[in-house]
Structures are given as C-alpha cells and as structure tokens.
Image 1 (cartoon, rainbow, N blue to C red):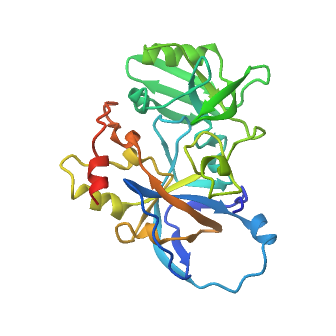
Image 2: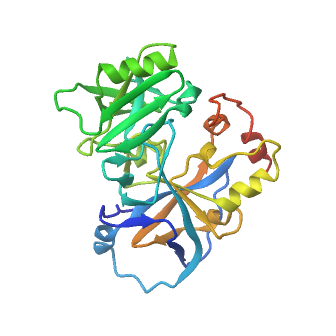
Length: 300
C-alpha cells in the first residue's frame, strides 16, 4: 500500500468508480459497518510494476466529507479535503491529530468519557475553537510552540508521541469532564505514527496518528438507511464517524469494494470496520447505551 499525494483533493459530488477485478470473499466479523481504507497515490504507483489497464465502474458519489480533529469529539464537515497518507486534511485541520490523555499518557475516548462527543470544534484563521455544554470557549492555535513538552502517549497498547497543548487546554477539558485531570496533545507530521503491522499483523506499509486503525473510514448512506429500518431508535452518521459518506449504491455494497478511485485519489480496502461501543454513544446527549446499534448489527 502507498500514500496519497497531498495535492490530490476529494470533493463533494465526485463519482466513485471502482476497478473491476475478480471478486474476493467478504470479510466476516461481528458488528461490522463501514470500510476502512488507505489512500494510494501517484508516488506509490510510480514505483509499482506496470499493470494492465483496468476498467472502471461507477459505484456511487461522494455525499459528505468529515474531519474529526480531536479523537472522540464532534467532526467538522467540509466541502473538499486533501487526501494524505495519514488521512484527510483541510489546511491545518487534520483528522484525529489531537487526543485527550490522562496524566500518565493513556488515551481517553468516548468509551470512557462519553460526553466528549458533545465537544464541537470550528476551524478559522489556523485556530481551533472548542465549545461544550456549561463551559466557555477554548481557542487553540493549530501550530504549537516547539517549547511545549513532548509527551509519551499510549493508544491500544502502542506508544506514540504528542505535543502538549498547554495548561489552558488541559484545564478546559478537566473542567468540562469533571472526573480527573486531563491533557490535550497534538500529533505533528514529523512524528512517527503507529505502524499498521502492529495494529493488524496481516496489513502492512502505512501509519496512523490517533485513529483506531486506518487513515480513512468510508460509509454508504444506503447501509445506514438499511440498518435504521431494523431499529426503533435511528442511528446517525455521527454514530459511526466516517470520513467519506457515499451515496448512490446498494446497502452494504461497499463490503465488496477492493480498490476505489475518487477524483485522482486511489484507495485500497484494508478491512470491513469492526464496530465497538463507541457507536452506542448518543451523539446528541453524550449518553452511552452499550447496546444499540451493536445488537442489531450482530443480528445481520
């Protein structure tokens, strides 16, 4: 797998063709919804062996693009985004490049603190503005002073660095969550990400910052609509936190896609995304249910 050139852009309304190839067995798992993908770009293809010309078949259209700056906080919907090796980017706004941690460096997500999903973020003039219920706003520059401390962080048993965002940001998250002392760190492009082979032994040759497992997560509107026909309380896109939402395909058709082309960006499927209790956090209330939509997904 390669990395997408940062100059290529995904935009709303772009068709999503796939390369025609021999069908592969679907990845089977419990409660999977969404397609984890890694972008393949011009540099990677330049070094690859020549390949026979492949036919394209349109399978859908890009309907939504989302960037989630802080892991587990609200996403920012954008009209266009650069596709990089470590996920979507819009200016200095990067996907899951910020992370809430405990003082010992262990990650904190909505699995432990569900109310993180109520933290909204806006991006303007190279600054992130944080808002949350019952606290004032926090304004944080996307470029931190190099004098800020580098912290050792821990995500799913793997070590990774993060630059401390300062005492004001730490106090803001501590005051909001009201359970213990927290800090906010930022991943920088010069830092070493978590290697894919340490996340999935069968997947190689890419890195991620603070996402769970892949640079890009894709979901179709049809799959979500199909799921909602089976549930009394309807799930939202925000329950599943995809980067790219595709329209114009059949429900769960994305499970069969192996290689995709969006604009000039080639993407390679990693696996169907196994879903966890994050999906059971209500994005409107910050209350964790621990049941739906997982129970319904398991039944499919």
